[in-house]
Length: 353
Image (tube, rainbow, N blue to C red):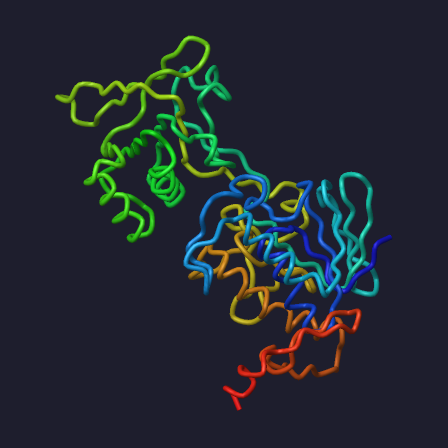
């Protein structure tokens, strides 16, 4: 039996940052993740994807963000159960919980934090007759390593942030990038829309709006696509391509967590965001993309904030009646469980008096 103060289900960025916030409160954490390595989607799906909304990082690759988080939590010595899925949640008479994985590994903690991102997921696939026969032969639903597309002709379909971000990034990698969206307006960040428009005007991206890829061609592997236009008077556009990447998002599934008696709304876990991000089960919290509440923003930044707030209330559950006095890390530094201390820089201390 693995015992810890806080058991975190999901080792993505939000789960990893929870270890840091809990460590500042001298709380020990253990993480469970079905993937074989920490980092969640950032490691498994798009380690080379640039992320733009992490404070102090104008741009950081998803894999580098995970690496930085792992370095940040190292002083707090978290435990990991990787390659196993959390299956069962059982409350004990003392109020603690035992979580058992699909491989029978048992974990016990007074606080359980669900930070499972979108849960298990499958890519949403467009309705194209020949799609399946070209999978792994020119059709892919995610980009792990953009270098694979260096010097190649790529067609990306989609109208959200992922399609826009990858079209912008691959404009400097691929020989030719075409972006196809069925509507005239994109759903992504306005800055990304403007960047893509500028690249289209300069000829670095071929932009097709009010259009969609309708047919794939190739002998054994993808060689061309036909793009149909919403306007009936426009003839199909045929492009020679090496790769077609439809990025229509992921279809999330909570998996076994959905059977734990949690209050679910639209495949996400409802929490009390006015206080502590606790679920309807006492001592069980949900943070990051897996939760929902009025005004929810599915951003890594939001998950980090929720982790910090949640840990303050988790401390009270683990240490009833005991008050923790929060100290700024710029003054007190960061001390790990081994007693080692990373001192704050002198000039920062002086600056805040």
